[in-house]
Image (cartoon, one colour):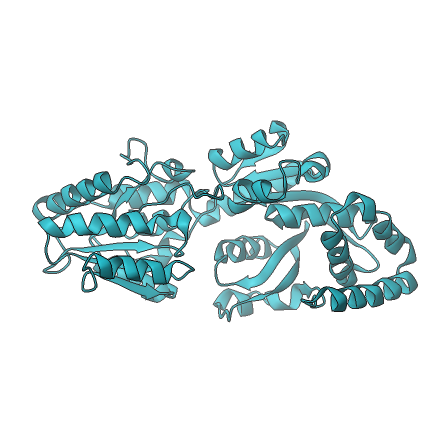
Length: 405
């Protein structure tokens, strides 16, 4: 098959699951092109060179940040396309009434690497906005092929609140299929009037072998170690975890809580920890690479994910760090929000979001049990390997492509 991936950024430090999916297609001997807006972060991944992926990336021209420069550059691209690809350029010009003005301007930047037209069996766009642009480019004739759009969370939960419930109307009408990582996201799309028969659930997965397994017969050290991984944003609920740790410390005076990640709430969380006299208990580690994370998972006794539904509507679509923690043999505590329940074995006990007392009580109980009885993490690792193995999910995705053509 000839497959195109339409992405916001490639390669991206925060979207390695997309890289794994593309590598899976290349290693299955499919022809792959990648259409991306930009490079995100300084990514050095062995799969990039091993599969020569950067030789198959088409980047759009850089979009100026100021409106006047953007209009000027759009005009020059428009004139160039009129000369080099007249019919398709008129197709873009004809979309101006049906498209938001800023997105209409964006189309000329996206169309430039596609001049002359590109034909594929499947065009897989990640995130709803990229799917919408792919549909517009197909309407203008720059792309040919079945368009699959993957929704991951923010695009289904937050974007419709910002841009209107009908923002994806054209995408749902003209897109060929929609992939969701959880039933939760699938339900969100149905609420936005996406036809149910076009929705397919294929979770995002991990390579379990990337994470070292550690059997726990007690605490890993003299003091209990609790770990969280996630961006320091409202939806992650870390403010409730900080409050909970103040209560946990009444029982375990030497408990340590490490948070991996960065974000807009770092300063407020630091201030909260200081106000609760937890400076020597809570540690904000910033961003860590995979090797550093693997070590932290091995050193920790308990993983907590205190996510909430944020004011802007954001919720966890799936919670991939839960897979990493379980693959490492860690006991997990999580809140009942978004698609988290689908990322844990059946029968897992979740706590209500924003309930610091319940979170503290659960942490205390789990640490006490762990100290006296240990924890057998094989069940969690086996669950992840059976349901969220990246190779199996890549095969599912490729079979799904076959169904469309």
